[in-house]
Image 1 (cartoon, rainbow, N blue to C red):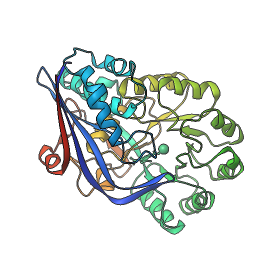
Image 2 (image 1 turned 180 degrees about the horizontal axis):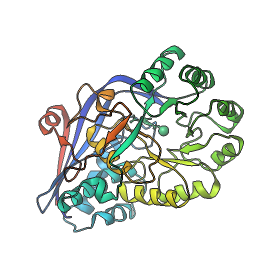
Image 3 (image 1 turned 30 degrees about the horizontal axis):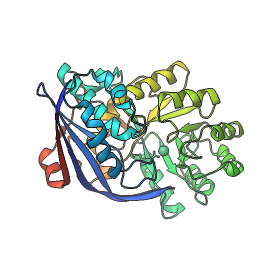
Image 4 (image 1 turned 90 degrees about the vertical axis):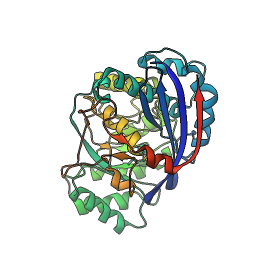
Length: 372
Ligand code: OSB
Ligand code: MG
């Protein structure tokens, strides 16, 4: 591929309901979209999964935008490069900024899929035609509301319910859900770094609730303490924030800091690293699943394609569009069937959903165009 033009756009999309995690609350998404134009004529939409606030990763929309403009896009514009080499090109002498890098890199993979006439899932090596989805429930007003939402979610077909927890909203809250939904339901908890090792005894009380996993209880960049905590828990730990590259996944395994990996392609710098982490985990018997960042339907298309790889054996955070938005920016919108399965689009090259350009233009609050 050879890019000759990149357009950055910020759109605003209000969430249907606020999403609260231990480290912050989101009400409206400021979404950074990229349009990539290949010199050969192909055009691809991509999404940078940064948010407004640096409470999940240190990146925000206001760091990603200038990083793309000043440091990353100039490397790609006018250069002939294989999609598989884009990660290395962007990685050289630019530290961090994984989400900014990933948006460009994944867009290049989409362009390569379009040029090869392949669905993105096939270019990635995906084998699944449908993917099981779970729901990620934010911290609720009270236990009663949480139990109602979890019950409704399972009735709607979701194959897993992830409960956001924080100190003071943990054991009793998850226990209430477990008692309401019964022993067979697939439940897990996600703490988004809200605990320290001093809370190990508290977290160990979750063992009695038979969770599939506890996601990222400790600091966003920690492995050593997670390993200590894992030794004290029966429940598998799953790492999210801490896994920012293949090397960190290898370190997790070496240190026994967790037994499951949540792969978010934005967090690890794109598809090359996502596939490498997937392959490493597969070789070592570590299950993976695809996390979400409240993406628009564009970012979701990339996640669904990735989650079609064989070692994505656990349900992903791939809720239907209608769970987040009154109207998504793609057609058809993302849906799931009554068994919580999301279909992988395999009938068209690239993302397999149509992007509503006119609507995006109408929602745009800021734009910048870069040329080779
Ligand atoms: O920790 O997985 C997380 C959303 C924003 C930031 C971090 C996380 C999440 C989610 C939502 O859990 C997953 C989704 O439905 O997109
Ligand atoms: Mg998480």
